[in-house]
Length: 157
Image 1: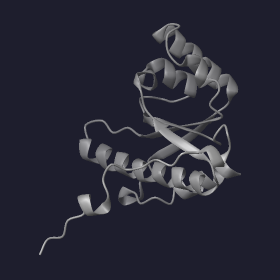
Image 2: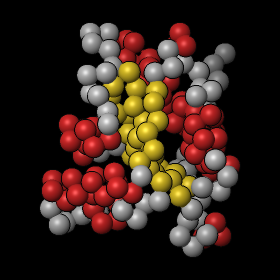
Image 3: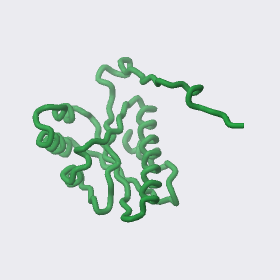
């Protein structure tokens, strides 16, 4: 139910010419195990491949691929960014933390195959990891920003 509400919020994001370029793929434990094995095969025993299996929620986000139309591709990616933000804010409103991640493993053909992504039709925007803080919400440390509004907002006459 929480994931469905997050996706409902995500697809309310503004998007160029109502292209609705996004797709959300929830990964179950079997798929995550295959991805952890892929990471181990690529990175070796060094790294965080075992930690991957401990992440409670995985949702891959993709968007439509355009051949030769960089402007449309860019516009759709911006729409996907808005959708991901909506998704993450929805999760946070229900007390669930999330992280949008993108890395070299996610750009491999093997990753796409494991996740059922046709790379002729779609590009991977990233993976949203989500779940409750291990110590509960009381232990969650809010992120602080380096700059305040006064440092980044300017007014022109």
